[in-house]
Amino acid sequence: MRRILSTGLILFVASMIMGSYAQSERKMIGLQLWSVREDMKKDAAATITAIGQMGYAFVEAAGYADGLFYGMEPLMFKQLLNEGGLQFTASHTGRPLPDADKWESTMKWWDACIEAHAKAGVKYIVQPSMDKKGYGSLADLKRYCEYFNAIGEKCNAKGIRFGYHNHDREFETIDGVVRYDYMLKNTDPDKVMFQLDLYWIMKGGKDAITYFNTYPGRFELWHVKDEKELGESGLMDFEPIFNASEVAGMQYYIVEVERYSFPPLESVKKSLDFLIEASYVD
Image 1 (tube, one colour):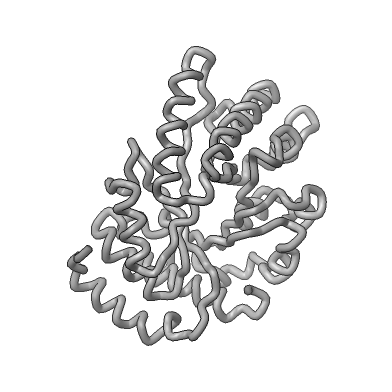
Image 2: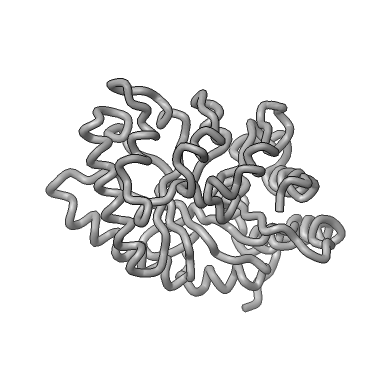
């Protein structure tokens, strides 16, 4: 598959060749493509090439809709990634909790979604958020847990793991119960894993390691995040968290940058370099 790179990104890719990618063995570090969302809109092929040349090993998508990834058929998008030296490991997508009369149509949407991800060889589908019901009553949160268990069962049938990604509101207390704890206790570990966002749990006033010890094995994916580029704020102490990766059950960790001090591609490279240079990161 031949693609033409934009001039600016050609220069960026060339600079990457002399950087992180020159290592004989690169760490298995993933990138959430939401971090470079505007670049993906402008030139997905060039952006993917740049990410692979930096030294990232895999991606988590944030661009699924109507059976397509960033407007591409599943196998086409997978091929684009593979040509860039990247694996298609995970994907953010989902639907809010349906009312009873929408349950069947929502499950049909999930069947098509899961089939598209299976074609692309994705290992993880992650629901990135909940709607207002998830932050309302415990009764609605219970319904969300039942919904996630049902989706997880469908994903399991296709060899895919299903999970949920937190923000900070999951750590609010309602009726004496922390929402995130309720979700962990009321979802089936065989059907639902959790993608812990290391920044948002800190902003929610909770401790990642405490959760690892309380719910061992539940946190198969991590979002490694800071205020902006990794290591820049001084707020995040990643070393003890990475040292507890085994008890957490972590399988993959994924960089996400949502706010920037630099252009997004430069920003995600700085974050990658931070993890490459960290002795505690495998």
